Image (cartoon, rainbow, N blue to C red):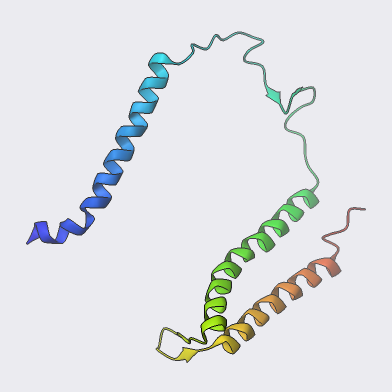
Length: 139
């Protein structure tokens, strides 16, 4: 009985085992046959983007850099939600099929289009809000 309940997970276990063996093998081969690194004061000095470091690396940055980075992440991550919607919408629009919700209610392409319209309206509202607050200005 126990074997029958574990059997569906055997492939996952074998895959994890193979990945661990391959990773360990690669590390061992690289250690044994790879080049030996020599250390010294010049070799261990920090080197960034092709330029030697000439200023202190712990200087303070303007908070606007971080604000723009967060806005980029916010609007970039939102695109992750657009891709699955586009696939479902394309299927519904080309075949005329309906997609069942969790409760079994079938919805068509009109419902999907209105839902994405609301999603984009919220994104547009957020962008306009940030624009009005001056988050996108670099004065």
